[in-house]
Length: 336
Ligand code: PHE
Image (spheres, rainbow, N blue to C red):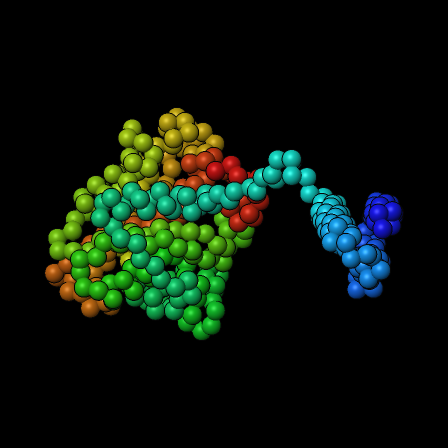
């Protein structure tokens, strides 16, 4: 009985060594370990073994069976793990592939910074719809019916009396409608204008609107707030000036300019050799607006301002083409 055991083990090991796939293993298992396999035959042969030797021989067969089972399992595992490695080209010793981390868009970064500065001065953030009615975009803002901005030339019409908002000022009306004074909000958002796309203008851009209405708000508070803003945003040595201008929804109105931070006012390409950069429009809220929102024009006064974000970001980062903000070229976005 000893020899058959040894020769079965030798034959089994030879066949196992020659197997290279999981499919090769199954016939080997059947040949040796299945119910009609060679191990089973050995157990059958026990019948003819003298009673005194039975326990010892039985033990040897048990051991052979366990060895075969163990070696078959080990071989199967080896085949399995090398298959996983070769199909996925897994080399666990290689360093990981870096996943590029996204960054905030420079427009979002600029808006965030401006929000933070105004939040410190007590402004909360409001927003409103980008698709607006003629009423909010123009009428309640005191635009006369024949104002050129109401023309198809400048404004995208969605339907009769429905437009893509051309500025964030309609949200002034919506905010005042929704709450009694005092209000102190900034309103960032997208605005749309029907313009030829070029390095300097786009059909879509962003503005931040500001609105403060309370009892006894004065023009000097408007100036003080904006001066504080430009000092925090551009640096405490920035020079500024206000120049009278016109908006239907503010009276009086003023554009704010800062000294060119590229050339400190000496004159360069960025400031078109004027030394000054226009950064926002502003003014005291026109009393007609209060009538539209149910405020008492005799009891309250307020100021508003609005600035274009792309322009501010372009000046700040020295970007000479507004279209770069909308192309999402990763090489551009990674610079900020
Ligand atoms: N809405 C104006 C514009 O788009 C900016 C502005 C806002 C001016 C608020 C005065 C007050 O140019």
